[in-house]
Image (cartoon, rainbow, N blue to C red; front, side):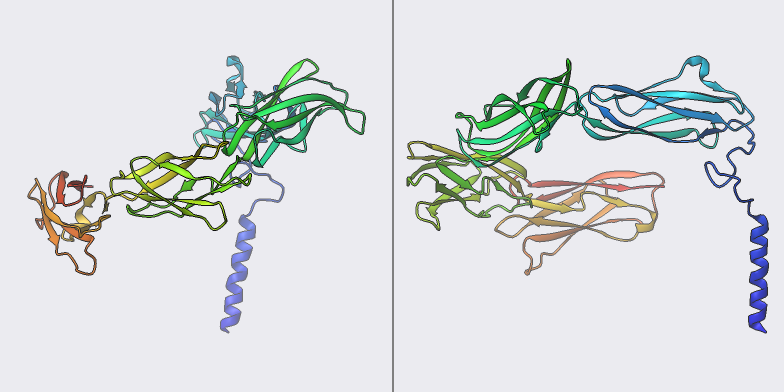
Length: 450
């Protein structure tokens, strides 16, 4: 009997749901309702919110059209058209900004592909007086093609390249059959790359320009990551394609790794893994001097291979808190490479870390003490000489140091009264320590009233 009763109830529920559902094929708009159903007031409706312009060529100006309809029973006002990128412009005549009931307007969007490359997705927004949907985001998509292409890619590999080395040759051809690549210029920052141009013809008889790259004699040693711009003229129209030159330039002395970089906060006194200087021309050398700036100690030792020299750096106690960048300079007696440089990037651990950086008390934490943790980056133990607040409504207590953790101390703050104040109270907690450059630490305090 219980099972039959359950089936009866659910059958009634299903019948009721089917009766309330709209007829199949009625359509939908913003939600599940019929978009053409009459609504009191104005109602903005877009049949499509995406325009796909497909493939467009660089430096061309193309256009698409969005259609806005008014499915309400009052005039729809198009109040503002906003483009989120300078490459897009929306146009609509002022006389067309009022859309009557059952009326429609066409909004033209222009896309300028100048200096753009590859897949593009641009957002525009239409603001109206529709009370339910006053703002509608629309999307313009396109794929920007250059009028010429670089084969095999607009990428120059410079793996352990040397000054004077000849690199790979790139081939540049027009993208569209029947067009002509008339001129080409390569722009590379600095004195790193040199290039030569020559006319070429592919297997299909299409003419192009070959680009032969080489490393400049005056190029500096070290890692390379540069933007390259290919400026070409096709059928009288200028176009540009961006590429990269990535790798490293090595000299008679190779540097491995090519930089000293610490990605995590580093405590003072830390010694880093050595940088190895290795001769690449078979000539041994001696290190005459090392200069890594005022915040690093340095030492040298023979490397694993014959002729190698390991340079080790150690962070001094005088190093300031936070990011630290410098360039280490090593002077050698090598006749062809008397100076070797490598960059150094370190994030120095603060001398005294304070967590949290501020204390907020409210009604829910009225009688609950809030603990502040201090941890030093010193060899000796951390001492809290005093901790006080100018406002006596905040009660401050220093927690005794633990012998197991001499570099960690705690300070507790609580609201001194059992009653919350009538208005917000703001003050500062001043902590005196034995940490150099952090003798006084200020922690803001606040009792917030909601």
